[in-house]
Amino acid sequence: MSAELPDGTLASHPHSRAHRENWRHDMINLHDNVKLPAVGMTGFETPLTEEEAAIQQSVHRFARDVMRPISQELDRMTAEQVVAPTSPYWTVFSEFAKLDLDPALIAQFPPETAVRIESLIGEELGWGDSGLAVSLGAAGFPLQMAQAVGNKELVEISMGKIGCWIVTQPDKGSDITTLYPKQDGAPGVPFNRGNLLAKVGADEIVINGQCSSWVSNGASAQVALVYMNADYGDGELYDGEGRPHGVAMVMPLDLPGVSRGKPLDKIGQRALPQGEIYFDNVKVPKRFAVALKDDYYGNFASAWSFAGTHMSQVFTGVARAAFEHALAYCHDRKQSGARLIDHQLTRFRLGDMLRRVELARSVARRSLAYARLSPRSHPYATASAKVTVTEEAMKVTSEALQLFGGFGTSREYPIEKLFRDARAALIEDGENNVLTMRLGLLAHRLFDDEGWTQN
Ligand SMILES: Cc1cc2nc3c(=O)[nH]c(=O)nc-3n(C[C@H](O)[C@H](O)[C@H](O)COP(=O)(O)OP(=O)(O)OC[C@H]3O[C@@H](n4cnc5c(N)ncnc54)[C@H](O)[C@@H]3O)c2cc1C
Image (cartoon, rainbow, N blue to C red; front, side, top):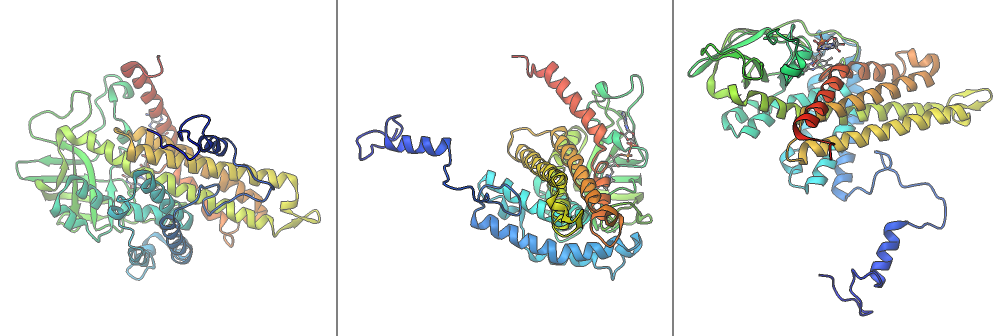
């Protein structure tokens, strides 16, 4: 019911002044000049609230003053040096803790605000350094799962620890992203059981095998959220869909029988310590399980839908960092008697980069909102945003390197590192072609099973 206004009309009445003014306001935001638009660190952004701006500023300072200098140091170290006790890697965690970014506090904001705050934080961390941003994200994952299932003992075990997320194995890479093997697997071939197996007993779970060398924080983690195939001793190895049964658990990594491989040496995100973890008859109490047999794939899909969103925010930050470096360089470097920015072609190239950063940010935010606020999220939806954002980040970092000319290839300049970091992201958290193929399967299932798009 609309309030009566001083002119005697109802506010909602089409002839009321309030309605007319609102209508006018809604249609065109009139200005009497062509001054430059309002922009923030995150581009063409509607105004941030005081709290949002304060959080963004404090994470930005951390990204600029702690993450960037440390990541540049770590980038030049060997993989072993990155996780040595004297490495500056560990400082990132103690400094990050000082920011006091408690997810429970952020969750108290209205949902849309909480999503924007989470996006702002992820983007600043990615702008600081993607390898460290992924390391910080993976570090908190076992704790978040312990909290989600409400297991106080597991919360205690993971609180204040560096965590990791173990899913892939040497022989089971893209296969871990298969949720519907009846449509996605080779006909007549039993689905891949991988190299990590848990025997689930009445009170105890015994683990044997190893994870892949790609596990983020595999070389630094103290606690893990582990997804693996399981034998429940009942002769049933596969479920009705043809998927191997599994068990998910949160476990400390100092148990007898756990050992590590050599930290992985790789092209980009060199500040992110990756490496194999071996399990030799490792005995874990069954109460550490967060999902058994029938709950396993639902739990895995929820975990991936939730955590995979971080990738999109982080690589939006990487794209933005590359754009900012290129923008500054084009104001400095002169060719043909003028600064690069004074040439139309370079302006076009910068405009194209900025457009892609805005695209990445929009997709990242939309996918985060869907994952957090929709009644039923799906990992293939989360992953589709990761594909878009990382492909755009790759294009932007590559074009930034090109704009730096020969200097772009030099390790004296920051662009080649961003280029290497973005390149790894096209495979990280699922290889992009495979993820896009899974998105196509999702569209097929929605069309066939739900009648989606058929009205
Ligand atoms: C930086 C980084 C961080 C990572 N972090 C983690 C982590 O924290 N935890 C974790 O468990 N893992 C992690 N991974 C592993 C990552 O998830 C895998 O690398 C990824 O899923 C691809 O698996 P793969 O490397 O075994 O490649 P493969 O699956 O062997 O793929 C090789 C090629 O074959 C193609 N291919 C594969 N299957 C098919 C198919 N069915 N049809 C057509 N083509 C196909 C792919 O497109 C790809 O080009 C990380 C990887 C990277 C690079």
